Length: 570
DNA sequence: TTCCCAACGTA
DNA sequence: CGTACGTTGGGAAT
Image 1 (cartoon, rainbow, N blue to C red):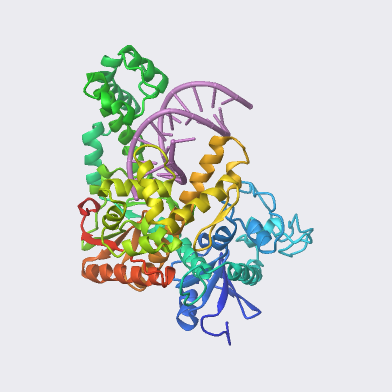
Image 2 (cartoon, helix red, strand yellow; image 1 turned 135 degrees about the horizontal axis):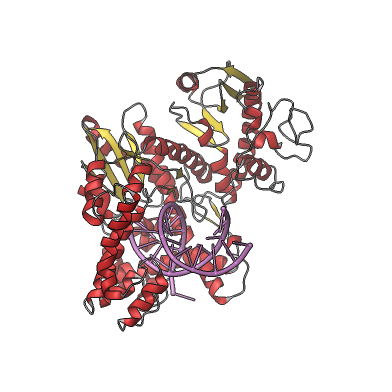
């Protein structure tokens, strides 16, 4: 198996029940095995290949794959949008129109996949005459467990993965490398690699879970919403206990109905356009009913979204909070997570705790978006400002403003804010950092015109999703979206390059990344590994940013701390 | 049953 | 008229 294949070669990998399909150098191998992890680990050791697979979700088998090419992840990098089904990936790589979206619902019932190869007219060809992926291969029926040919098909499928990878690589090579002094593979190729690693990391995060101290979580929830109800009737009663004091002020209304809350507030003399917390907060002391409502809302949020039911549904018996992870959202490619992993209220952070004998190593990138802007725009003044630990200090000096004003001005420039105090400061930004502002304005203009933009690292951000309306408000919104996407997207690329480097450094150790939060990494490691993990995080940032922003002169900084509980970090 | 909105948490 | 995401409940549309 894999005889004569050279080290570091691309190796197609497809895992099916009871077997593995491999391909490399124009050959393919169907390998029956019930232990794909061991097989893969052996190949990893011997060849250290560029593992090439259709999608990380399908291949995760427990072995560490160091270098990889995830066709779905790279497809989304090149094409933007959400689709990553094999039909769309194949078609785009061959510059053919995307096939109809596969149905969301699982195939209800099917035959052996041997005699029932519907769309392919009884042949066993993965690609139809029209040059599209055959339906039975696209939806996985071709690899059904009862199908005796599935391992041979896996090898054929692995071979086709290499075909797509080759075509994707040619597309990546056509994209510009915008670094000042390129080194190693071109930047879009490096982005493809780190996006692929992030796709694997996303699958690993789903499986690993975030260590959560259930007792602490239950205490926090209990303090806010009361004891765990023992029956549905009890739940109703406890709900009334929470609601009634507020209803005493606002009247006999349903507090969960915004319309009724609005009229209740009007009866108290508050003529507000909506009932959002930030709008009601100024009136907190004006009437006890407002304070009661605001406090009720906070408790209700915990009770409904992060209450006992959430704990029961998402926290395993092993004390791990698990949710599905996606390596890239559709807008700018940031990672997303379900089960509340990305919007856990600060109130609950004390419950995120290391297991016995372990610690959490937490690191966040400091002021990452303005530093990223400096790198992608190559604005000399802003690049110089990144040498400071606090980037806003030199910016304030350059603008002749105080630090809070400087911060608002920078954020306003990146996010497209035009109102409020930002106006005058923005004009000074234009003088001090013309290249950075021009970079942002160029993205905004593309967005306004409905033209797609590409991030520094090569990700396509589609504007078509916004619709082609000529409405002024829609045009402005598209402009703001594009202006923000080139910064947020580039920051996401850097973050994933960093995370992928940390992941690689943890290979072979018991340490794991357990949370990614846009600019923050949380690692769970044995106590004895704490200092080496902290050092790894720092060197990984130097390596990742050194490649990503080679020659830019931009300095990236990370704040690293070793803690027992997430809440102990600053 | 499905979809959209308001609301609010995170970055 | 700052961006993105996920989750909830209500309420309208189907």
